[in-house]
Length: 240
Image (cartoon, rainbow, N blue to C red; front, side, top):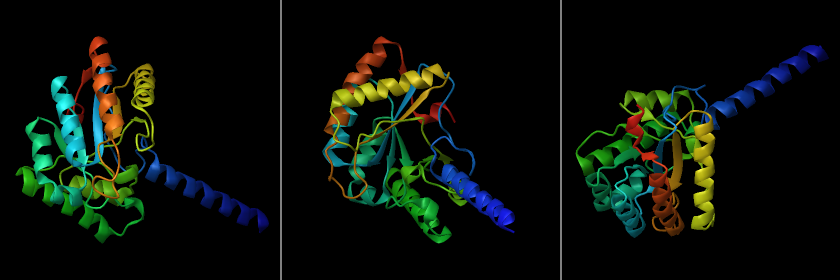
């Protein structure tokens, strides 16, 4: 009996570990197909989460415009309601505006009803501001379960993950952030893949509550370096 009990316990632990991997690993496809990156090592998608964020986002738009670079912004619905003009500026500049839920919860532990509220609510806010459907969705923290991915697709959105994340919510300098991004690009290139890098122009907890200027400064320098190496900046729509 102890042998059987031990085997059952081992299966339970393994299942729990697999479930955690499926829910929280950026590259996992276990709980449904997600878009990660393309197959051209010379393509990089800069994606920005947790905005819009007032002057910080607007400075970032100025940097992107100077370099003629396209980016993707996954915005929080609650902040969109407070700063619709910033979201309009993002779209007017030719960038993609994606769904990052209404309030940025860990979706893998939410009820079906809460998941629907978060995704559909954010879609409605964005669509009311822009007058066009939302095509892309990123789960906060990348956390999902099968229903999250399925419901996003029911709403007509492509779930998007990433293959490079540099932790710019930490107090890193622009130089440190640039080195972390470049290291991520090199890893993706060695694997024959494009780079989909997560950055942040806002903070999920409060509008205007974090200093993202090191990220803005880093992007300016990074885009110069990438242009010198003929690395192209693309939106996630280049891949699906």
